[in-house]
Length: 231
Ligand SMILES: [Zn+2]
Image (cartoon, rainbow, N blue to C red; front, side):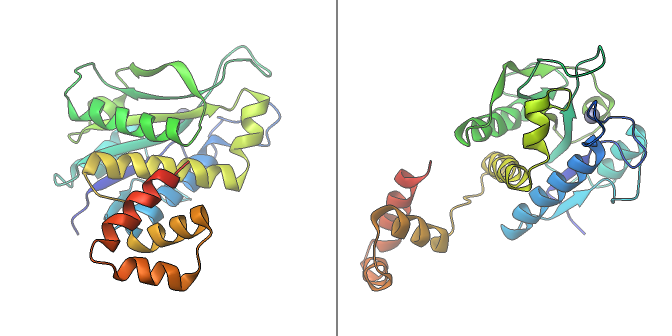
């Protein structure tokens, strides 16, 4: 099978990366959000490869080999949450993304910016310095452009409450997927979504929408009206 995107759910079962009170496990969060992102992307016709299942804990090298076996992959996205050492709850918070090295026009950094823009538009709180470079194995040993997302800090009590919330996870997944689609140049707004947005925004009846859509430039008009209604 040909894949366009590889999603790498960080860590795996038995990982020590947890919130100080043990309610939150980074590996479980990473798997859940990865599956949500993959589902949204597949809904837009993007074939997604995951580096692990729920029960697996591949090494960093294995994750790279899994992705590199598919040279057609255009983007590798590793999903994590961050931690601040010192023990107990800590104050640092906010979402951010890593790539291996600078280079404004490199695909890895274009993808990172697309995802950050999407997170910002969704109202996800970003860290001050939200795009940073680190030589993480999954960023340096992957042949596809690669990014690593740190979705907030699981050492921050307020963020743990959000990271445990399924509705917030879905919001994150939507934003990640939107950024990935933007990077791939795929228009995520389907006619039906436009219909729903315009209906909600202007309080229109179903038949008014039908009428609008039948109009010669109806599709474009709906898309424009829907665009203005996105929050
Ligand atoms: Zn991690």
